[in-house]
Figure (cartoon, rainbow, N blue to C red):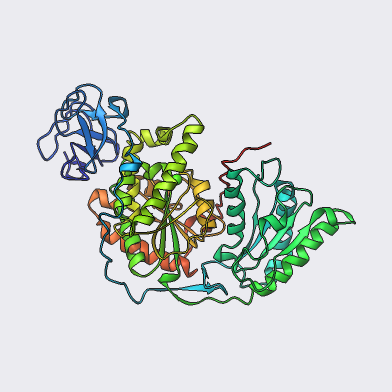
Length: 514
Ligand code: CA
C-alpha cells in the first residue's frame, strides 16, 4: 500500500471505543490500522469503526461521552452505524450543574482590528446596506420590484453603499398576533431592521390593513436612540396607482441612501465583532476538524473582546450539562436551561423530540444520532465561560461567549442571529451547502478536504487538512481569525458574497396562524 493510502483514523478522546475513518472514499474490509486492528468490513469515509469488542447493551463512547448503546454484539473492526445503536436519554435539565466548572479567563489578545462602519448606538457594521423592512408578506413583491429599481437607478450614485436588501417574510397577517408565540417573529423583524449593517436607518413599507401595524413592529421608545423616526411608506394611502407607490418608496430610499453614503470604514477593535457560529450539512469529521478549529477561533475572538454566539438548541441539548457547568454564573446557567426547557416543550407539543434533528445527509456522513452530532457541534463554542443567553429573536448585549437560542435550521438560525446583532457569520459544513446571507458575510469552513476540492469556489477555508495531518486545529483557527478580519474589513469577499448567494429570511414562528 502506498504511504498516502495508509489507513488513517481519528479518535476524539482517549476513552473512546470508536474511531472515525478519514481516508477519502473510506477503507476496505481487511485494511490493517497502525495498531494492528483489521477491518472486518468496509467502513465509509467519516464513519466509525469499533476499536473494541462490544456486547449488546454496551456504551458506545465518542468524545469521551456515551453517544449510544449497542443493540447487538459488535466485534472490533466492525462498522458502527446508526442501525446498531440506540439513543441515550438526554441530560436531565433539573440535574444540570450550575456554574460548577467556570473556565478562568484566557489572556487578552491585543492589537487585532478591522475596518468597519461605526454606528451612533456603538455597534459596528461590516457592510453598508440599505435595509427595507416590511410589515407583511402582501408588500413583498412590490418591495422587491422597488429594490430592483433602486439598484439600477439610485445605487450607482452612492458609491459607499454596498447594496439594498428587502427584508421580506411570510409573516404579518393571518396570524394570532396576540398569542405568546407571536412575540418571537415580531421581535425578530424589529431587531433585524436594527442589524448593525443597516446603519440605524430604518425604512419600513406597510400595506395598511395588516395585523402587524408599523407601530407594533417598531414602537416609539422601544428602540435604541435613532437619529430620526423610521420612514414609513403605506401602500393603501396611495391615490395614483402603482407608479405612486413605487415613487414614494424610491424617494424615501434616496433620503436614506444619502445618509448611508456618508458612512466610511474606520479602524475598530476586534471587540466590535459580533460573530455568529453555525453548522449545516454536518458529518462525523465536523467534531474533529472544522468545529474545533472554529472553537479555537472563537476563543481568540473572545480573548480579543468580541461577542461570539453559538445557537441551535437541538444540537446543544445533549451537551446541556457541559454548557451549564461552564456558565459564568448560576443565573446564566438557569437562563440557558430555561431555553432548553422551552424547546423541549415546543418539540413535545409538535409530537417530536430531539431525535428528529439529524438529516439523511448527516447519517450518510457518519453521524449516527443527535448525541454524536451535539458533541461535535458544541466544539464550535470553544473553551471560554458562557457570559450570556438570548431568547429567540432578542438582541445580544454581552461580550464574550453567548448562547443565542435558535432552531438548528440553517436559514432560521442565520435570520435569528442577524436579529441578535451578528455582523459576521462562520459556518461549518461537511456535506456541503452554498448557504449565504445578504446582511452579513458568511465564511464557510469545510470539515473534509474532498468537499473543499470539489467546491473550491464555495468553501472559504479547508479544515479537512486537520484530518490529513497537514494542519493543526490551532493553525486553522488562526487562519479563520485572519480571514474574519479581512472579510469584516471588506478587503476580501467570502465566496457566498462573491456569487451573491443569499438565502431568504426565514422567521421562527411558534405561534398559530389563523
Ligand atoms: Ca444549522
